[in-house]
Image (cartoon, rainbow, N blue to C red):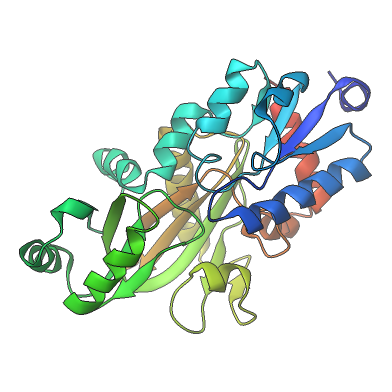
Length: 310
């Protein structure tokens, strides 16, 4: 089916909003996709799991999933769409569920020899003073606390003391039953978008204060992005190879973003994979595509074509 036929025949739905902590960003991403498709004269509707009945998804041919976080990136909506025989853009059930689980992703990539900061996974019942002391001995004094299955840096805290660790864990357990404790690696942060089989230009991220948290991503005016980066061709090629290897190993498809830290010894440390990257005005994937001369509408159209190929 070509694009002209798709405009005439395809019933497309953009799935957005939902119940996760990332609802507001999801609404922005989904609406941007919806407006682009409408402008390009496709037959498209919006579907919000918080407001709409899942049964109506039966009537669509293709879904553009823009649900960030739980219920969207954990494989649940993908499984439902497969049950309804609705094609969708993005990673499948297994890859989605794996990538949202930060600890499981790290375990898999560690097996393949990909560097990642030291980490441990905690459950609430495992927390006591002795266990916290042991964590500091293993991880080091500087660490991040991360809900294991949340995106957009929600619930993440940087800590340097046992007292801060206790407080951070208390907060993190309000977001997730499992919490990741991760070694702090000092260095420069990079994000590598991927669309289809193509690795897009990497983006270097510089935050003026603190780290690249939820506020820095979506609201701060002083977060700086450099694309193209100042990496040498050799460094950039190495980064792209690692990013694609991760994307491929985890079984991701269509679109995603792989995040890294480059330390002072020029070692790349994998941080996480985002299988449904944001598509807002400040999102990294559209920024990277623009460097290649792809407008937002071009990007949406290309993603649509990837979904139509199934």
